[in-house]
Amino acid sequence: MNIVIIGAGGQLGSDCATLFADRHRVFSCDLPEVDISDANSIARLFERTRPEAVINCAAYTAVDACESNLDLSWRINAEGPGHLAKEAAKGGARLIHISTDYVFDGKRPAPQPYVEDDAPNPLSQYGRSKLAGEVAVRENCSDYAILRTAWLYSATGKNFLKTMLRLSLAAPERQLKVVDDQHGSLTWSRTLARQIEPLLESSITGIIHTTSEGHATWYEVARTFLTLMDVPFSMRPCSTAEYPTPAHRPANSILENRVLKEAGCNLFVDWRQDLERFVGEHREALLAEARA
Image (cartoon, rainbow, N blue to C red; front, top):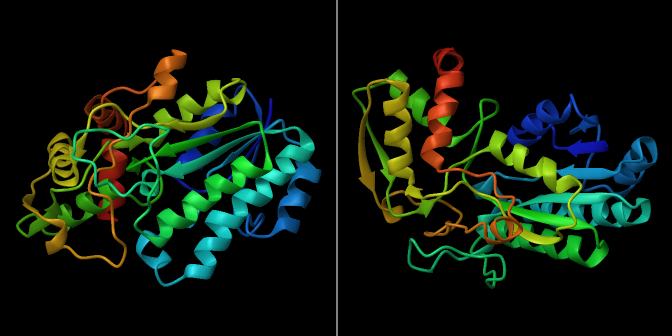
């Protein structure tokens, strides 16, 4: 299959490019080569590559910065997916678009999960712009899958796990405050990439939740990760109110992969199982990067 991956420099895009390279013809791109907020840039991309499938991993994901960069976040997260959807429809390409748990307000008591047909109600500009992107995809093409995921991490790029490791190595005696009242499912981007591959040729359309099984708080995630990494650390739980941020974050980001399970193709495992494997494969490289 001829596949275009947009946002290939990010965590998920990089894993998709690596995973699919041996079995597909992959064209990987990112800024400044391709700008999804520019309709002409997208039209040129499709004309040049003529894809059978497009995976859109590009997004403005700086959640707090979205609050002060309204125009930029809207152009990338809301209008950009619309440009992609229109070109996909013209060219007969299947569109896989990555969305987020932030489309929900998180007010449902944990551990009750959100399913695909629950009504969205985003709390932040990031969530609002990503929800608008979902709408743009639905309105402009018919062969699409919108994958909502959450709490991504990988061996490449920046993420919460790497931040916790870097801070702990720099000053293991310093007590870190980590939020313990936000609940979600830590998700390895490589597992998400593995899940995307069978969806490329699938007849499943619409919204699909794609996160690890199980759930935890950020505090529980951090302690589990650093313990697996076998590094000294000092940490205490705190509330969201003790760690204020410009963007409001959902207290409950737990998503149920109902569509995948009903289709019999859910590849996700418990987040702890994936995290153990991740650390087993990447521990030395993670330590070296954190110490650099």
